[in-house]
Structures are given as structure tokens and as C-alpha cells.
Image (tube, rainbow, N blue to C red; front, side, top):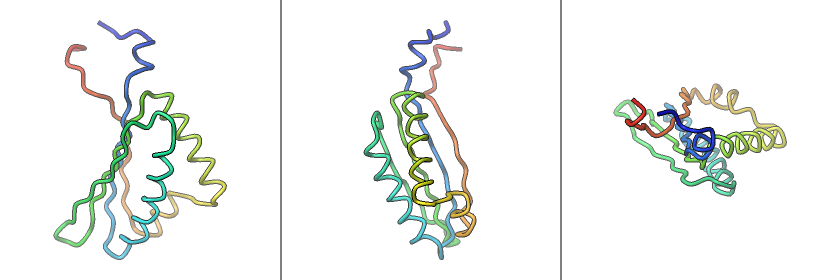
Amino acid sequence: MAKSSQEHMTEAVFRIDRFVVPQKSETLFMERLQTIQSALDGLPQCAQNLVLTHLNPSGEMNVVTLVEWANAEAMAAASTRMKARYVEENFDPQSFMKALGVKPDFGIFKRYNKTLL
């Protein structure tokens, strides 16, 4: 059975991003990530905001961020606010990551609901 549009609007949405961070860039990248995490924590309907790390034997760090939003509208509003903040700060995330040699992978996920099959 398909979900109603009301149910869809209240479904939690997860932004999960993965980064491979060279050892030489770890400090700068993690400092910026902490600033972003603090900003997201203060936004409405941010239910969960995690930063997870794993050090590879090669010395690179794998970083995963997971931010849970109450719904897609909350995530879209947060994205708009963060983009405006980046403009104010003259911060370009893509250029920042490229300069540091960080390899990103971005994704938006929803909970798996096996009853929809």
C-alpha cells in the first residue's frame, strides 16, 4: 500500500555523507566539520547529528556523517540556511575538499520499510 502524501511529509530523512581524508588534511577538515556540525545542531527538526571516524592502515581517515531530519522539508530548509551561511562566510565546500584532497560521497536515505514490497 502506498503512503499518503501526509505520511511522506512526516517520514524521517537521513543525510549520510562519507569522506576519505588524507592524513595531512585531517586537522583542517575536522575543524570545519565541527563548525558545520554545531550549526546543524542548532537547526529546527535536527533529530540526530553524528560524526563517525575510522583510521585506515594507509593513514587516511574515513569519516561518515549522519544527520537525521524530521522530514524532507526540514532537510531542505536546513540546506537553504547552510548555503546562505556559506555565502556569508565566503566558503565553498567543493573547493575546500578539493584543496585538501578529500574524496566525498553524499547520499540521502530513508528507513527501509519492508511492508512496501
